[in-house]
Length: 156
Image (cartoon, rainbow, N blue to C red; front, side, top):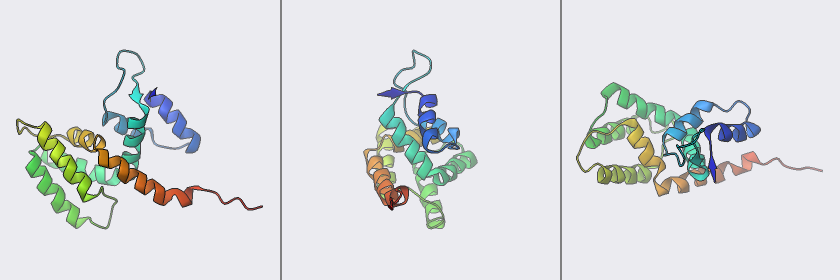
């Protein structure tokens, strides 16, 4: 199933009328569209949904990582990795962060995709995380923990 950003936003607004469109736009920029020949651009629904969940759950972490790139520009994977782990230690309890094994697999993916050892960008990192198969497990685990808070008790 394919869906545009506008269609996805309309679906989300049925559940949460003030959900930020910017989260959906950021999520869409982290995946590749399915259909760019027609307007509006269409995305795979499952990929967009997973990307939106990731951007929503880890929004503060993503802002922190983006700041690392803003402060340092594009950088080598090794340099970014050391900066990320250094900052990860200092903010360990203050914001939600993806699990270490998810980040490690992302680094392996980035390294294998980056054979020329060129610098990576923030969008490279986001796309690698969102395309990581472990992300679905992580997001689903978080969603399951939130499930009791989402159900209304029916008392008669």
